Amino acid sequence: MTDEPERYLMYFADPMCSWCWGFSPAIDHIQKDFGEDLPVRLVMGGLRPGNVSTMSEDDKRQKRHHWEQVHAASGQSFNFDFFEREGFVDNTEPACRAVVAARTLDKAKAIPMMKAVQHAYYIENRDVTDGDELCRIAAEAGFDEDAFRKIFDDTDTMDETRRDFWLAQNTGVSGFPTLIAVDGGQAQAVTIGFSPAENIVPALAQWLGREQAAD
Image (cartoon, rainbow, N blue to C red; front, side):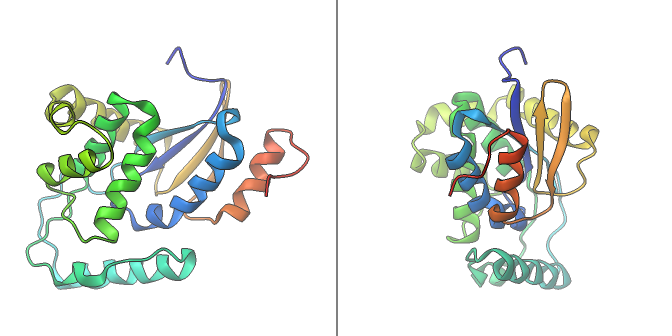
């Protein structure tokens, strides 16, 4: 990308990754503390894109355990009514594509859109595998629903989403969230997996050459 800043953070995430929901306050903190000095480039990693299998009871037990772990580690809330669903197919491609569609319409709204999808999924127990529901969430997040739907359904957006998945795979990202600091041609992992803001912000401040992190 020719308009890429010299220094930035690549944030590999998936809206339906519970650890990314747990990491959301850390991203908020990073953006507040570093602003334009270290912009965040959000890349959709693709946790389970194209999955067609209905969640089994064992799948539900594993997911519930993960949610409980994330809640304990991050304090983020979850709506456990989700586990009363029957026949849910845990396909993360539509949610990822919705974030890519938002990014296409307004790059600055990519992270806010991901947060809106996360809140709808984890707090409101809405079906974020459904395109119509995602378009409604986009409208609530400030997008024109018809314009968003057109971009969401466009084959170019589907291709762009797959390119995000490809980038994650070819960067060697094996889990989400992953945060990579980029300076020119040099890249350095900041965190692979969940970490609270207090563990990340001082390291980023040092990397940027600041004497200390912002409060």
